[in-house]
Amino acid sequence: MVALGERHSDTIQTATRTTKTLVLFDFDGTLTAKETLPEFIAYVYQGSKKYIKALLFLPFWLLHRLGFISHQQSKRQLVKLYLANKPADWLEDVSIHFTYEKLPELLKTNALERLEWHLSQGHEVVVVSASMSLWLKEWCEQRHIRLIATELEVKNGFYTGRLATKSCTGKEKVRRIKSTLPLQEYSYIYAYGDSKGDKAMLDLANEKYYKYF
Image (cartoon, rainbow, N blue to C red; front, side):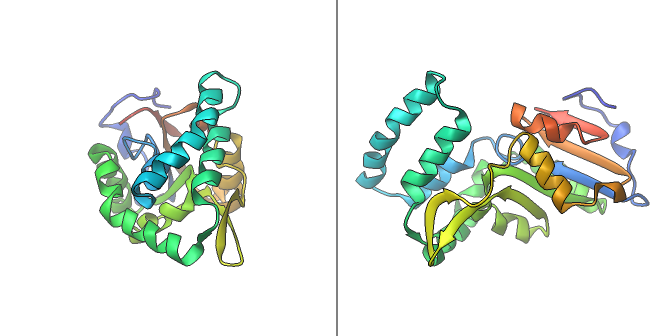
């Protein structure tokens, strides 16, 4: 087992093309330098309406800062405030533009290089994120990468602002991974994360990297 966050050049070759290898990447803070939810909302909203809604979100931000609600709870309120009642077709089209126009500047070059290295080795790479699949799925599909993420609820062609799944963080990441992937079929597992919400996922791995990039 490699120490968390330790850089190395020899053990990275432990899993070869002859083994079935799984690579689990967190997204926000691991592959990106910033959290993507606020960036996506800023991309969706232009002008004064964005700031009016920011004022409505302020009480929840203060509750989070004071420790009365969790980060995930504040994120759910942010999603509800900004994304509720948006037409699904329109918002999904915006998310594709976000993928090409905004997301590239948020990515960490060295993290992306590591991900591409794993792909070049024939490893199966999976992004496992607490962020929403809405703005991650196009990026993953471009690279033929499987995505496990938080899903938003859609009813009658509109996003409701509610979650369709539990937030994909902590133990929920592990539950989703185990329900989606046949872990017993992999002879070697890598995992990369940057927060306490990733630590349960990291414990699944033969090699785990915490705040590596």
